[in-house]
Image 1 (spheres, helix red, strand yellow):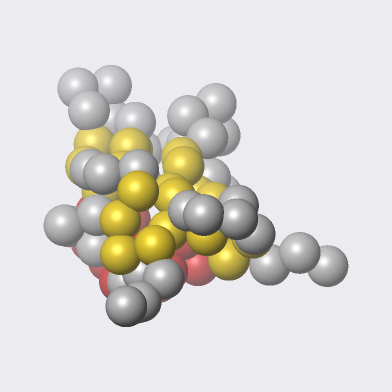
Image 2 (image 1 turned 180 degrees about the horizontal axis):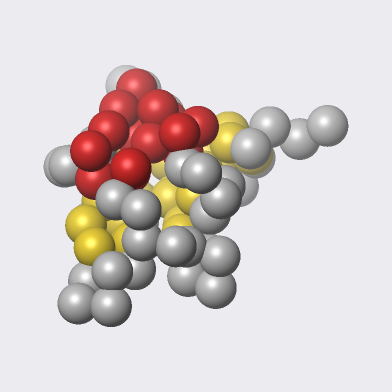
Length: 77
């Protein structure tokens, strides 16, 4: 069984670029205010979701392991 991730979008930082939806349409959607949010906050680990987080121009997406809340992205220093 693979890792489960908890995905959050900091809506105070999100600029609604839509990059996350382009990278991971099954993982993210934009609401009527063009703010991103995960389709499912807790989901299976996904290369597409990780690519979306890495590609966010304002680093508004964070990913942690669902069980331990250990950081996946951005990585802890």
